Image 1 (cartoon, rainbow, N blue to C red):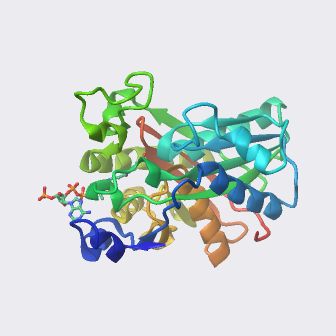
Image 2: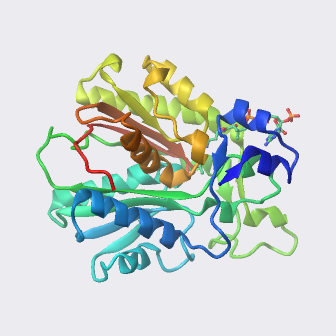
Length: 316
Ligand code: ACO
C-alpha cells in the first residue's frame, strides 16, 4: 500500500493536495515484474468462488495494461484459472473497459454463445505512469475485480438493464500513451521521452467525465423507469471524489448514496467499478434488492452506464 506521504517524499506534492483535489488517501502498486494477468486471475478466482462455480464458457478481460502488446492477456488468465480451451479475449476502453466488457459478455449470453462468462477488470496501471509526473502518479493505482455473468430472466436480481455506451475519438489526446502502438512503435529519436508514458489533460477530462457520466446514467435510468430517488447506490468510475459528487448532484441523487472506494485504491481504470462493487458488497453497502447505477468515463474518449438490482451473493 502506498500512502500520500510516501508519494510526497519522492515528488513535489502533499497529502493535503492529493486528499482535497482527488479524495485519494492510499493506492496499491504492483511490484516490479508482476503482470496484470496475475491480478486478473486472483480476482477471477474469487468471483468464481463467490458464484459457486469452477467453470465458465468464456473469459473477457478489460485492461489498459495487458501483459504484452501481443497476444491478449485473457488467454493467460484463463490458463491460470484452469480454463484453457475457453474463449478468452481482451477489451480495451480504458476506464470504461469494464462496462464494455460486461456488454460483450451480455451479448455472448443473449446470442447463445455462452451461459456463463467471467468478466474481469484488471490493471497494473503504475507500469504506464511516469513515477515523477505528479499530475498522474498520485491519481492511479493497480488492482483487479471480477464478476460472473450468467443467463437468467429479464428483471431478476442481477439482470443488467440497458447498457448505454458511447465514444468520441476526437478526444483521444486527452488521455493517451503516444508511443508503443502502430502509429509510433517506439519513441522517435527526436520525440519527447514522455511519449512512452501515460498522459492526461486532467482538467479537460474532469469536465467531460462529469457530463458524459451524468448523461449516460440518465439514459440508463430512463430505460429502467426509475426516478433518481429510487436509486439506492451510485457506483461511478472512481477517478476523483469531486467528479463523483458533481455527477450525483447533477443526477439529483444524494451524495450519501455514492459508493466511494477511491480513497483506498485510487483510480484503477478498468478495475475501478468491479473493485468498488466488491468493496460495497463486503461492507454491506450493497444489499440484495438495492437499485444500483453504474457509470464510467475513460480514455478514447469512452463512456457508459447501466442499472441493475443487486442480487444475493456469497462473499469470496
Ligand atoms: N500535487 C501538487 N500540485 C499539483 C499536483 C500534485 N500531485 N498535480 C498538479 N498540481 C498542480 C498543477 O501543477 C497546477 O498548478 P498551477 O495552478 O500552479 O499550474 C494545479 O495543481 C492545478 O492543476 P490541475 O491539473 O488543474 O488540477 P486539478 O484540480 O484539475 O486536479 C486531477 C488534477 C486530479 C488529475 C483532476 O483534473 C482529475 O481528476 N481529472 C479527471 C481524471 C479522470 O476523470 N480520469 C478518468 C479517466 S482516466 C482513464 O481513462 C485512464
